[in-house]
Length: 204
Length: 259
Image 1 (tube, rainbow over the protein chains, first blue to last red):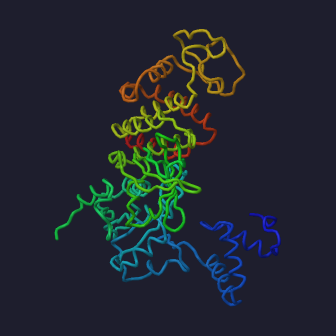
Image 2 (cartoon, chains in turn brown, green; image 1 turned 90 degrees about the horizontal axis):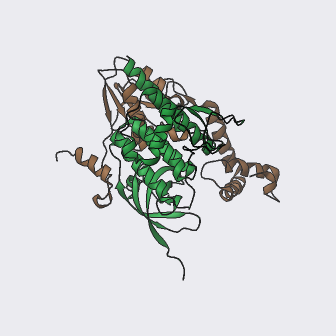
């Protein structure tokens, strides 16, 4: 959207609409609504939003260890001496680390790939943080690699690529269990998921 | 009378992208309507009844509802999951290469049941023999055929004389094979061996399963790959993105054999 497209709007407001319109999932109408909402906010709230955007862009860096986004490298998880350094969990996205941490059941380290191998979108191993992962895998204290990419075609392809290139014979490589979600229904489950759930059945 | 609000179709899922908070925008090739894009509401939630049926390279029976802008997937049931194909990295990449070509060549809302069946047959052939590149070569050839771009293989496209059993030349730009006497000014002109011409003619009269049984040596395989990939790329008019990862896997497998 250009500024000429919003007749009657002040140029600075049109610019705000234009910038908001660039965000994923925000169309022109939503961008206008958000822009007018921001303008009507009390000064301190609007400046706090602007400051949050500016400081996150200025301060956020990749953690030198896990490649997660952090204010200071190494990130709090990698710097925590209580974390189990024999386990490394590979995830696609920083949001996946938050999801795993919410479970409070995993105490090892992470590695964030920032995407998955997606041949159809031209994303290969070189566009991901895979080189950094393979460097970390050489550490002798590491005993288990948990590949927690999403159970999608591209997530599975990435997991296969990691397994093929990890280069250690003594490393235990696991992936998260596939099966039925809590609250799900057998009747509507696809055959692949149900087969995997059956293969991974457990004693009760 | 108003058209019915819902309809059923057979589809192969090509790809999907996230849409909004929890929806997916699914791109698929259907037997009945050609390429369509439809919304799967709430499919990214872990308890979604749809998501497991919508993975790329899955043949699905769909129930769809006409939407204001885009159709909405109301039900989906896996017809053929190609589960074994999805357990092999090379086979997955080959499948995605096929999906990219079908996405490029398939027209929206224009049925081409031959192209749909070609995709299904080729996925079966890749699943049966993930290491062979022949299914891809057959697919590329038949893709041109079912898209109305079949190259001429029996007569010179310039002088129309029947081709002698000899080496010739080929150009996608002029529509196929040229005899050695004709010399059009064409940047896409390339040599075509008699062996490669014979394989192309065999593709023309065989099914994918039959053609895949043909044993060919490495140099002939390279010639066919280069010729068909160039021709498909010429008509597509853009880079085939999955090709670079496929090439990378191919080189790595050669390296593994070498060591």
